[in-house]
Length: 169
Image (cartoon, rainbow, N blue to C red; front, side, top):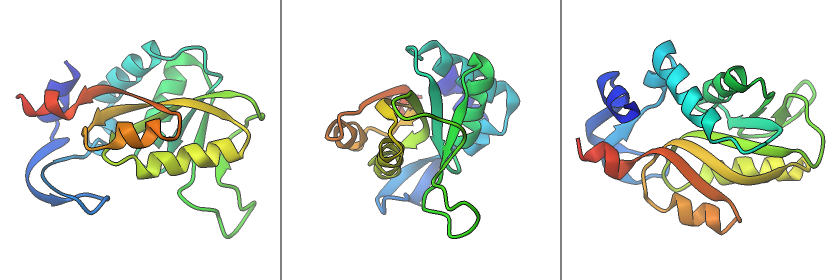
């Protein structure tokens, strides 16, 4: 099972941590431990690909979701976009990297969702580009308000693993 793989590869650690949101936590989930392991990345991509529902593009916010988006794209043959965390100050100045057309439906992937702040920012950037985003698929939902925050933006959160499942180990 994926949750077992996440624990075994070291993606789940216990101790005292401060999350990106500023919240304190007794456990930390670092999906980069999983997404840099080809076997686990392939499994994540397979599971996410099974849940796609006809979307025309895949998108991931830099940095943690980019390998996930690329892996799901390889699994499905569906192109992907990289959503930058901020506007570029050089080059083309684009926030969205990749080819797209307004009106296309996007399957947004995430590594870990806590409060969903970066996901909401990414969804807004995609929508500003004229794209349609209705849901976000994350590897781990920490179940700390992210689903409600996304729901307020008319986005459904789906997860491969929840914090509750991880912590029952």
